Image (cartoon, rainbow, N blue to C red; front, side):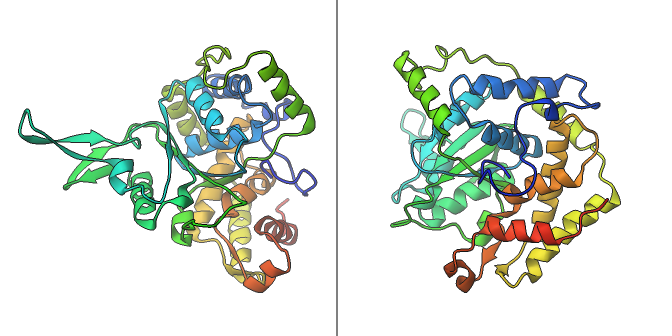
Length: 341
């Protein structure tokens, strides 16, 4: 699973090492995107899994929901990722008084020309960190999610396309829900991945403190030595190559069987929709491609099932009261669904 309980069963993706290369590893965009993790690691310690998840979302043209306590470098992560990919990045703090126009932009009257002119909002960027998206009312949430889905903003009937690539990384604080507006299930389903940003391991935290003691300034990425190792053209090429990754009928059936198992599970009151199944297909393909293969294995599907599906299911209240979690239920289903050989 991505950045979850290390004791959980199943393969652990996104770890650097020999498993990330293979006979299909021919360089080009894969090599460039592989270097991104090393560049981001110059500023952010111990979050390789999350970086890989964000790269998968960029390849699949999806969006990401990041869940983690304050202070685990979510903002720094997005800034470092944008810098290493030669992309523009912005951060928007969501608050209860934020209006849709504060996100998308609005028409402003210009007295000099006696005309209304459009002033673009922060959504007009490549990587948008939507910080604490559940702290803003549903109307503002819907404005952002509409832009995510349509890749454009319409003001007074005039559509304005957003830059490409475009990724929203929306954060939620898992320990504080007072005064929040939880995202409805239909809106959660629009996020391709939900990634957990964990607290660092002891060795990683020591490394963080050592860096700060040596003068590291998280506001100065240039001083951290982050280089631009990839760009939008690499993402376009990666997208085209990932679409060519082969899926056998058995692996496609395995994806469908996993999703159908969530719909009949007695622990769940909401299972995975066909949109979730197509998302799992796309993310498995992207991970297989990043791993240097031109085919998807059942292990790829298992590795991405948690991040792709955990926010698309809902536990029954009585099961939740017993202490069950979405990840735990998914692990049980993965253990029960027959694996193609």
